[in-house]
Image (cartoon, rainbow, N blue to C red; front, side, top):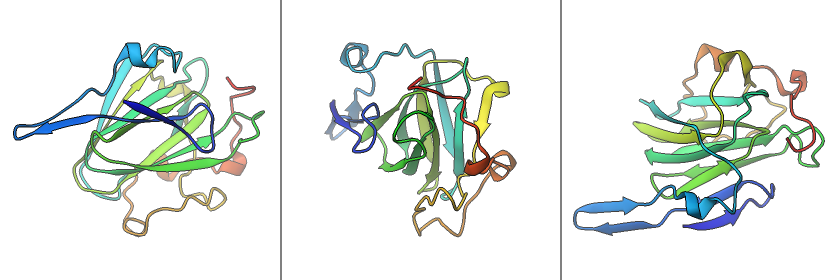
Length: 187
């Protein structure tokens, strides 16, 4: 594993996963506590797998408010995604700033600390995203912000821009200008 720090956020990490391949297939060590323990201060308590049938499936932008705020370790196990994070820590100089990544199967993992909105769009059919969280999901503390809000100006890949598939929850997300962040100083 090799870590690359975000160009924008000093606490977001892109982890290149080492894939060992031969005629049988491949092996990837996607998480190793001893590797991460001096780089992130999280104990992951929940793991989620999310499968999307079709290219263009949009999920997000989501986060959990305190006391259920979550840091996440995201990886793609099949397919490919356009992944977006937005800083919502109100007292940070990067508040409202976004960064995007293209993540493919077992190539890299993305560590997102608490205090960020997160969402993604599948770029291929039959895509599975797996992510660990350091706190449990609680629907009462979920925040949904409109991924397509023009004020966010997220540069959606042209290959999926006109064919997005969304849940009602995501279609009705809050505009960013109306969003009141529950995160203060670098929580």
